[in-house]
Length: 332
Ligand SMILES: [Zn+2]
Image 1 (spheres, helix red, strand yellow):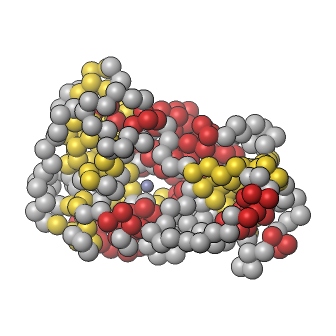
Image 2: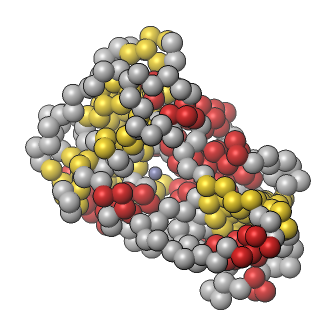
């Protein structure tokens, strides 16, 4: 089968072997997959991953499968959580994300979804509600990562929150947080991307290139919570400057490159720093189903898997939004 992955360079395999399901795994027919910033970092050498990439996907069951105790027939549309624990692991979904023996779909020791077939533990699967389209559902994984913030810090209507960064994840975090806080601001560098939020009635602020706090509106100070999602570790300094004493800094950026960071402001201001990664799929799917949030404006372009190299190159260009891969059936 076709497969887009690392060997160790990025390559489109013509004859990649079909994966065989391990104990407790279901085999899935992939329909649509999303290219994520993490994929671009993996191509640069982050995590040293080898094999088929892809962890954001929409698929259908190849065979009948039990999902959350419900028998689901072949053809049922599903999305899947990316952290795979061994078959004998009995912890919660949250503890599975941190299981020391886990593999991670398309990121660490588990073949990904940029191919017509992928295997995933049945317990990782979630049925997609009928009213949610494939192009919406393909955002479930990054949307769940945005929803993770709501599990980690209490956001009330009057909580003063900002997201720094208007990349794909930054925009999703903004959409999610704006559903909870009336005092929300998205800070970014790209007018066209901030515009997506403005259209939804969300307050935005264009960050001048100087990156000094003095250039930002005076009311953007003393915030309760700042989410750093710029993909650029340099933004940490600004993030700290925007927070009130004892405020909460949430880190969403993962980078292949290590970065020195002066922690003195964290100590002096007594900030709480929270790392934030994968999140709750059920919450993300509920938001999509209720129509509370529609990620469709984040779609940039759809490529067939056969043009996957081109798709990754486009996704890596500055300012591009979500690039999707349409995955053909075997023999199509
Ligand atoms: Zn991702």
